[in-house]
Length: 347
Image (cartoon, rainbow, N blue to C red):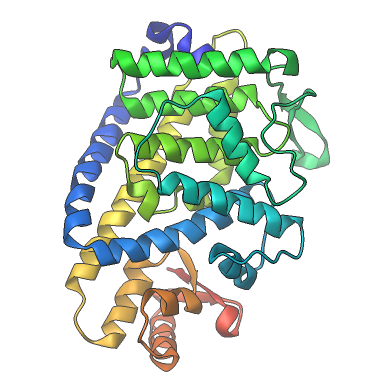
């Protein structure tokens, strides 16, 4: 809410490089619409891969880790869970599926936020869908000792602050004076500063980010996992949040470190998306070439053999192994682990 009290004060002195990043993202949004008409099957494959990567990464950021085989089964709709991590994994699955299947978008509201939170914890203890009743703290254990790095809004003020944030955010969008991605960044920053629920604030913030991006036509959130990119840069994620939340309670904070970080994640995602689409367009009928293109251009930064099997049905495991061995021997990818469960990383 603090970021939206005085828009002129909050959003003045926009860093010059940010303008170029935002322009790049908007160009990507325009290209994306062409790809949706020209290569719907490729986009369907990318969307399914991004879905699983997003569910996995957003939970992993919070330390909720599920074995990859089990993650695949749960993502496909299994309702048999072995532990709480798998139940929370399933909750994020339900929430992200709900968002990506929407055909119309309304202004975010407190009931909508609580509905997302209810979905997150629907398979656990059923305590989702409620604002916090106790003070929560953002702490760091760096150096082996506990340190409070930020104190969010107290519980007695949470409902007012969250409601006021969403109303002011809607008003700022209606005014149209500021780029929507800047407003989305400020929304998420304030949401995390309020920390409105007892558990799941980070995941809830990432779901809210996806919802607002899709509502503004930035569909890349369907085809590339933003959560995976946040997970891969989580040290920067936490640092920019910390830098931008300093003096937040006094309204003297600097929104730009966080907004610049989030914008770069989105720009990199569009780069990745366009690279994958272009690579698919150049593919020949040769099966080894198709595996090579996927491993070098379409797959996430770290992938398993089964990711290629899912993405390229009809290509034998023997062919995939042959290409992975060739790419390894030529120094273009390197393995972590052995056998079918090994992860491969592009060099």
